[in-house]
Image (cartoon, rainbow, N blue to C red):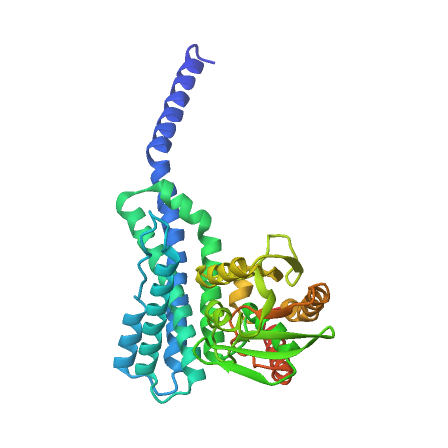
Length: 385
């Protein structure tokens, strides 16, 4: 070995290592952000494909053929937004929210009336909710695209990482919204329809309709006791106005206790369709109806019982699954047990949720459950092995 060769080799290897390290330090962040942006670009395109699919389904299923002008009007309506009220001073914020939601609902109904003026009320209700599903899918895709373009513009690697970590959940919600659009337009029960399905199964007497509140109610026997059972008017897609409905009936029918039945968000690891009992008003949404019911309950000292059927957010928005359908008898048992132990005063049972595809009584409910089972079977056959 020539003297000095080893030290010279060490010096060259150290120099090469330093150059490689320098290149890595300089260019690795750029390579990482480029790779992340490429992945986010594919995800954004997938979300935009969901939004396009939801819109196309709306176009295709309008009772009258959707011309160019109609398509343009629908595209424009998907940009619809609601500006939340000022809540720095919380006093009166629920009245403001109620006012905004009424205006929003009127806007949706007016638009649907312009698009399908000759359609039935059920068809209009289904399209209204279908548009809401398509709108949510579109807004999700638009927001993700906004953040992606912001990341590309300012090379914000930290934001890219945050969005990338949340993309799986965002895609699941967007996909569920797309499927909800199809379910509403097809008048197919979704997971959130389980509350109305439970009470419809229990309804075996004449139904009274409350048109303004989009609600129905019947007086029937449950566990040997006379009770009142109510839900949103079906089978069109609607959640009704349970707060306004209760304001109208609570005094007239001398309601002494309220039981609400609704879908509830499960925790990861919990079984879909499991039943939980509690107190309070089992009801999601923006909170206006729940606030109205709670105000009445406090004023009249009404006990509030709740039965919840557990499911994920995605399951609540998509076609009703077998596990959720199988939970109906267990939910009925839970309600009957609450009625038995509910004291001597009159009890009102409210099936909370979107009543799409769910009729108003026991006979309708049996037909609805047959249709749900058929849909479950067809979806299972379409799934790849």
